[in-house]
Image (cartoon, rainbow, N blue to C red; front, side, top):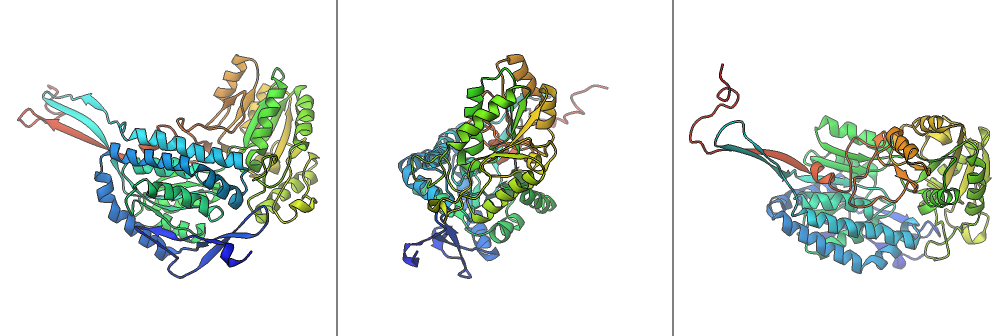
Length: 500
C-alpha cells in the first residue's frame, strides 16, 4: 500500500493538531490483510508534558462551568456519535478486526454512556445531615480533582474510553488520553465527536503512542493526580506501583478468566447459544469473554457435542463481510500467543475438538485469523484453565457437582464476569452468592454489560473501583464537607454539645 493511501493521524493538544515533537511515527496494520492503514505519532514524555500543560490550563474554566452545561456538551457528543456511527464502525473493523455489527455495538455503548453521563450533570448529588449543634448545618459537595490520565486498550476502542472520559468530563476534570496504539483512529474519531460538540480546547487532549513511552509518561507525571487504565494485569500492577508512590487516584480494569457453569437441568440449546457468543464474539478478544466452560455431570457430553457442531459452522473472515461470524486477531504476535496456549494444552493431555490450527485457506493467508477452538478435558489448575488467552479458545472443564463447579470457577486469580445456566432459582442464587466475580449472569453469556450498571471485577481483575452506572462519578470527584454555623456564637462541637 502506498504512503498516499495511509491515513496520518496527529496528536491534539489544546487547540492544535501536531505531530510528535521528535517526528517519530508508528504504523497500524489491518489485521485482515497485514497492510499498513494508519500512521500515528509515536509520542514521548515531552509531548505528554505539553498535553498536561494544556489540560491544566483549561481546568479552571471547565471546572467552573456549571455541571448541567458540561452535560449538554456530552448530549451533543452523543448526537454526533450517532451521526458518525457507520463511519467509525468501518474504521474500527479495519484497524482492529471487530466485525462491523459488533463495531456498531461498541459505538452504541458510547452513545448510551453519553446520554447517561450528560444527565449526571444534573445529578452530581451531595448529602445533607443534621448537625449535632443548634443553628448549624452540614452538607457535602462533589468537586472535580484536576487532570485525569486515561490509558485504554484496543479491543473496545470507543466504548471503554467513553466509560472513563465522559464521567471525568461531566465531573469537571480535564483529560489527557492515550488511545491504544493498535486502534488509534477509532479513538481519535470518538474524540473528534466531543470537540465537534463544543468541548473547549485543552479539556480533552489526545496523545498517540506506545504504553512504554507515552503511557508511562502520563502515569509518572506529577501533575496528573488521577489515572484510569484498561489493559493487562501485569501493566496495571506497574501503574499501581508508580501511582501509589505519588498518592494518585487510580482505577484499574484488567484481566479476566470468565467461567460459564452449565448444570444438568440447564436449557442446553440456550447455554450453547450463550457460550458461542461469549467465547467467540469479537474473536474472544474481550476481558469478559467466556474462557472456561465448567460442565457439571452428565450434561457435559450433550453441551460439548452441540457446541463443537455449532463452532465448526462459524465462518472466519473479513469483518466487513456480513456473512462472517469471527474476524481476525488484532495482530500476528497476539495470534502466536493464542496458538501457543492451545499447543501447551495439547501437550498436557487436553483434547482439541475443533480449531486449534492456523488457517490454510488462501483467502485468510495474509491476515492474523484464528478459528473458534474448543479444548476438552482441560485439567483444573493447568495453564489453559488459569491464564487469560484473549482469543477464540474455550477450555472445557468437566466436574461432578455444583460444589466442585464453584471451586473450579474460583480457582483463578481473576474475578471479572461469570455465568450459570440452570432452571432452578435456588441454585442460581447459590451461584450468585458463591462465585468470586464482579459480574454474574444467570442464563445469559458472560458478555453484555449495560451502560447504566457498574462494571468491574475482584481479585487481580481490578483494584476495587467500578466503571459504568453511577460508580465513576464517585471516583472522578472529591467530597468536600461544608459546615455553616448561623448561631452567631462559638460552638465547639463535641465539647459544647455534651454536659459532664
